[in-house]
Image 1 (cartoon, chains in turn red, orange, cyan, green):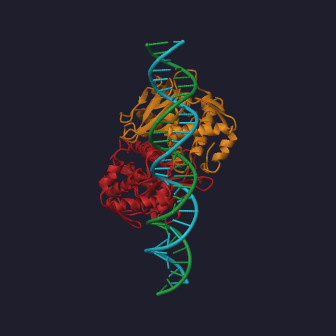
Image 2 (cartoon, chains in turn yellow, red, orange, blue):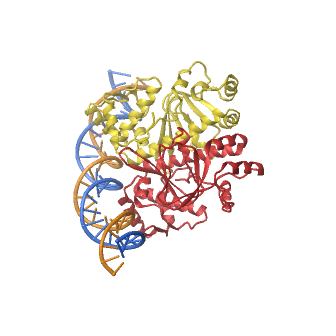
Length: 249
Length: 249
DNA sequence: CTTATGGCTTGACTCTCGTCAAAGCGGAAT
DNA sequence: ATTCCGCTTTGACGAGAGTCAAGCCATAAG
């Protein structure tokens, strides 16, 4: 399993001072003029409280959103109410790419904690891409990256057993957190067991049981949402065979 | 389940005369000048025999490929050899989008019958997109469409039972064939039971059994690879609840 | 024609995971 | 502090899909 549509580390390090997200979600290598063009397009960040929808499936698509702070899930729902979580998103990751094809959002985006996002009006970004080739290229790469991520989720859902799914999930979270400067082996889950299960194609009881099993093995410690990876190498061992052969990073 | 990254019908109808694929895989609405620019970029079509690889995971990425005639599968493989088919592609559909992010192909593309593809050198398409906004927009839409498709596969793999998966699969094939002018309810499967299973996250025996069950119900007729949908409405009924609420088309 | 080969079907059995149910726990509100 | 509520854990049980194995069929090869 690979990363979400992440931003390179060096870009992240530049971030945080002001409200504009350009340092965070957009490529380096732009000159002063180009940066100011970007600034003109990116809207001020918007706050979303825990549990609120950033957008809903079926709504008109106008903008992409980059997570500035906080944590989101995206999910698609079927008519009879089954919900499939399609991703968990943390800072620097982009939501809404699925809306471009039809000008309608194809999934819901819901904040799992109080969050801030940056709004990127898509048509303006598109126009700007024409003037700034590296920006255009970056967008293509971001979209491609999302496709790669989805393919890896398909591999997970299609081929892996419950233990493997959980191990891959924990290691993926760990890796993305550490890239962002957080502890890799000690973190708080932002989502419920049910949401994890939905993402992994498992029921919440199976998630709970499997976490307990890992704990019994002494591989992790579980205290409600607080997870510590004690022997991450054992988790890696567990999924060593079943991950994508060209796994990046 | 929605379509692959398909081409609008009206575009398809224009196709077929010469070797250039521009009528087939690219948007209408270009003027003469723009079309000739496109022609200059699109390479002549290339023939791929059944069983041959068009590209392999790990190879350098240079081009996207559009299916002109024939049938392909794309798949990712894990280290221990498990294979996940990520898609089946027919005429007008695009392969290789996952290679953009890292400049390395992320999956294998294998012809399931003798086929022809059109090569679209990506960097040139990218450049051309800057001069032809509608082309750029079209590419964003194609990529987004692939993301939507992948999300729907995730919904299928994460939430649906074997019968539902098969029904969705058959109806999706049927729909895509009929868009291309083939019979919707009478077709030849180009892939093996094992490949279907891999795509749907099932074992080949389960695929076989489920097809037999549908046949016993009188919903379909199965004669090896020859499938007839006798009561497609029953299949639709089966998946009525579990498909995406904003299912397109 | 016979024989091999690979794909497919079908049955019997197994096992993982889902379902149902009960109980524990923690946090929030009163 | 008390109560309530949602989330989680755990157990018992069952169903759906996987595994293993045998045999079938169709095509290709000898």
